[in-house]
Image 1 (tube, rainbow, N blue to C red):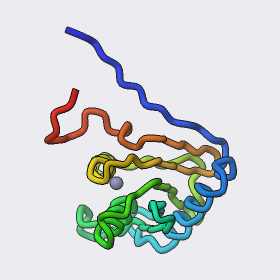
Image 2 (cartoon, protein in one colour):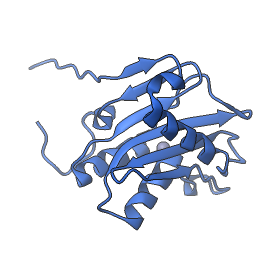
Image 3 (cartoon, rainbow, N blue to C red):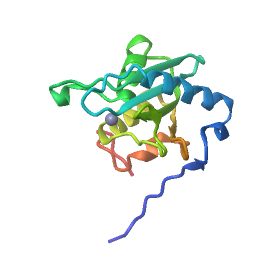
Length: 160
Ligand SMILES: [Zn+2]
């Protein structure tokens, strides 16, 4: 028997401005996208912005529904849309923010378990990791390899 520990690496910033211009712009796009979210049930508007390898940006936001499970998270709206219009365009980075009471949240929001599973499979499918940026007003987390967010994930691939 062996006891094992899994660590994940992430970088913490104290503001969105500290991120640098490229990721800063991505966060701005996520904020813009969140404004168009359809979230009448939770009043929690989430925006996601993907930086593609060809330097374009694709955004998504949460789309809720009265039949609750029928809605979809912002990250998955953006990821599925990006891969549906061009499956070969590699996603380089993903920024996520949330707006509550018309303001970006103080602390970052993190993807739900289902989104982590989708992010993990997109990374494996495109054979390129995704930098994840979780931005809040007072704290920003940058996870250099989003695959780390879901250790021991569901997979058909035999893992070590
Ligand atoms: Zn989710």
